[in-house]
Length: 86
Image 1 (cartoon, rainbow, N blue to C red):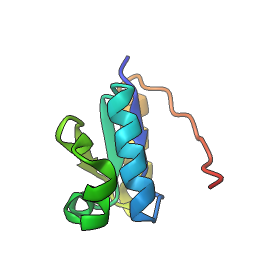
Image 2 (image 1 turned 90 degrees about the vertical axis):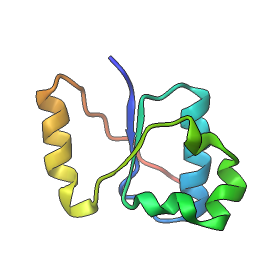
Image 3 (image 1 turned 180 degrees about the horizontal axis):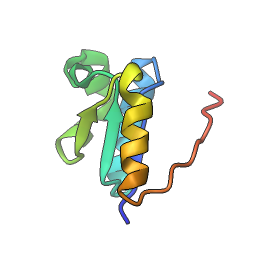
Image 4 (image 1 turned 180 degrees about the vertical axis):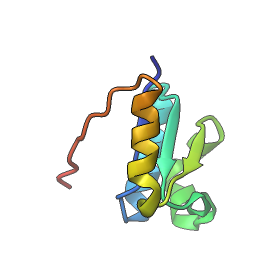
Protein backbone atom coordinates (compact mmCIF):
# COMPACT_ATOMS: atom_id res chain seq x y z
CA UNK A 1 0.00 0.00 0.00
CA UNK A 2 1.18 3.53 -0.75
CA UNK A 3 2.54 5.86 1.93
CA UNK A 4 0.64 9.06 2.65
CA UNK A 5 2.24 11.70 4.85
CA UNK A 6 -0.18 13.92 6.75
CA UNK A 7 1.40 17.23 7.74
CA UNK A 8 -1.77 19.12 8.64
CA UNK A 9 -0.42 20.10 12.06
CA UNK A 10 2.89 21.55 10.83
CA UNK A 11 3.12 25.33 10.95
CA UNK A 12 6.38 26.63 9.45
CA UNK A 13 6.94 27.07 5.72
CA UNK A 14 10.52 25.66 5.76
CA UNK A 15 9.24 22.48 7.41
CA UNK A 16 6.64 21.99 4.66
CA UNK A 17 9.22 22.64 1.96
CA UNK A 18 11.77 20.23 3.42
CA UNK A 19 9.11 17.58 3.93
CA UNK A 20 7.98 18.02 0.32
CA UNK A 21 11.51 17.36 -0.93
CA UNK A 22 11.83 14.32 1.33
CA UNK A 23 8.48 12.93 0.13
CA UNK A 24 9.55 13.34 -3.48
CA UNK A 25 12.85 11.53 -2.88
CA UNK A 26 11.13 8.57 -1.20
CA UNK A 27 8.28 8.40 -3.75
CA UNK A 28 5.55 9.07 -1.19
CA UNK A 29 2.14 8.73 -2.83
CA UNK A 30 0.61 11.83 -1.27
CA UNK A 31 1.41 14.72 1.05
CA UNK A 32 -1.47 16.23 3.02
CA UNK A 33 -1.09 19.88 4.02
CA UNK A 34 -3.42 22.30 5.83
CA UNK A 35 -3.38 24.86 3.02
CA UNK A 36 -2.49 24.01 -0.57
CA UNK A 37 -1.59 27.66 -1.22
CA UNK A 38 1.63 27.02 0.72
CA UNK A 39 3.10 26.05 -2.66
CA UNK A 40 2.79 29.68 -3.79
CA UNK A 41 4.96 30.99 -0.94
CA UNK A 42 8.38 32.22 -2.16
CA UNK A 43 10.13 30.69 0.87
CA UNK A 44 8.53 27.34 0.11
CA UNK A 45 9.56 27.52 -3.54
CA UNK A 46 13.16 28.38 -2.63
CA UNK A 47 13.54 25.30 -0.42
CA UNK A 48 11.30 22.80 -2.21
CA UNK A 49 12.91 23.71 -5.54
CA UNK A 50 10.47 21.83 -7.84
CA UNK A 51 9.57 18.85 -5.67
CA UNK A 52 5.91 19.89 -5.47
CA UNK A 53 5.59 19.41 -9.23
CA UNK A 54 6.18 15.66 -8.90
CA UNK A 55 4.27 15.05 -5.68
CA UNK A 56 0.53 14.63 -5.22
CA UNK A 57 -0.43 17.19 -2.57
CA UNK A 58 -3.91 17.71 -1.13
CA UNK A 59 -5.41 20.05 1.45
CA UNK A 60 -6.97 18.79 4.68
CA UNK A 61 -7.71 21.46 7.27
CA UNK A 62 -7.13 20.73 10.95
CA UNK A 63 -10.87 20.57 11.67
CA UNK A 64 -11.22 17.90 8.92
CA UNK A 65 -8.26 15.79 10.05
CA UNK A 66 -10.07 13.26 12.25
CA UNK A 67 -12.62 12.54 9.53
CA UNK A 68 -9.88 12.20 6.90
CA UNK A 69 -7.89 9.75 9.04
CA UNK A 70 -11.01 7.68 9.78
CA UNK A 71 -11.76 7.51 6.07
CA UNK A 72 -8.24 6.33 5.29
CA UNK A 73 -8.48 3.65 7.98
CA UNK A 74 -11.73 2.43 6.43
CA UNK A 75 -9.87 2.25 3.09
CA UNK A 76 -7.35 -0.12 4.65
CA UNK A 77 -4.56 2.25 5.61
CA UNK A 78 -2.73 1.97 8.92
CA UNK A 79 -2.46 5.26 10.79
CA UNK A 80 0.79 5.89 12.64
CA UNK A 81 1.58 9.00 14.67
CA UNK A 82 5.12 10.32 14.36
CA UNK A 83 6.10 13.29 16.47
CA UNK A 84 8.29 16.01 15.00
CA UNK A 85 10.82 17.10 17.59
CA UNK A 86 12.47 19.94 15.64
